[in-house]
Image (tube, rainbow, N blue to C red; front, side, top):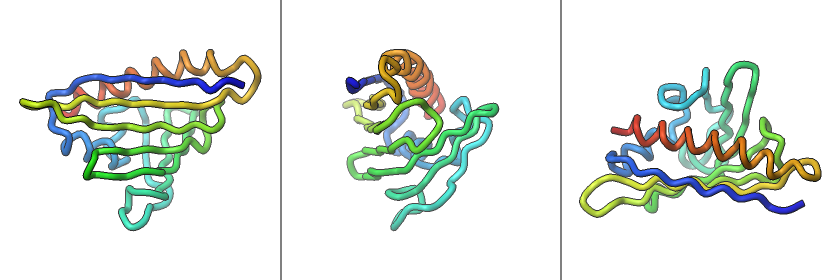
Length: 144
């Protein structure tokens, strides 16, 4: 099954450190994202929200879990692997915050995965891309 890729970018007038705080603190996600609840299921180490942290999101009856696999505030790079909640396997997303000279930040969210069943990947890509695009727009706007 072919690997699927998504690459979404939006600009925010907010500085990267403000966006980083929102992105990495799962408790803020219901404030700006489309989630009913979001929580830290288990902490990372050495940072609570860092590598190894497992995050749990609820939206209606849907539950999504992910594990943080990269957490680098120095380069504003955050990544996670999906554990459950989307019909995809080998899913990894990398989020980078790129400062813009003169102010603001480009938020870039890249995902790659394979469908669980033959032919499923392209359909999941369309739905997931729409969701990620909305999520990045919300983060960009809320960071102001």
